[in-house]
Image: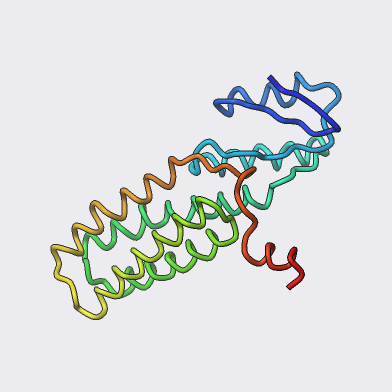
Length: 187
């Protein structure tokens, strides 16, 4: 059930179907600010972003944490590109240089976006980016055989991506990204 205090709305919901009617009809008057505390699963970030942007534009609500939800949505999109686009290409040809370069580019982007989010997403995106970059490095250097490359693409990478996409992201407890933490300490 929604609670309001000092013009800020806090809502606990299980699905987006529950969220929209609560947000738009049960809160009188509409809040001035909505704070995003968590994203239930990373894969829900794009839908939550769409919902929050429409609340902001249609009802004039200020969304606290919208930038983090935007970055979570970007991270989810990058994970989808890797799992649904790049990996199938590489499974057809393990040593395709263009697909491996795209995998390296995605790894760099995943790491960069994860740094902007902080917390769990930062740690897991850094670890996944390292796995992806090592994979590409082994391909270009020729240090691993096709069996290892195939196992990495069929088991290790998809399992890490699936774990990330289904994990709850708690934005209330996430420490600020490094560049924000340094500026707050006066550096």
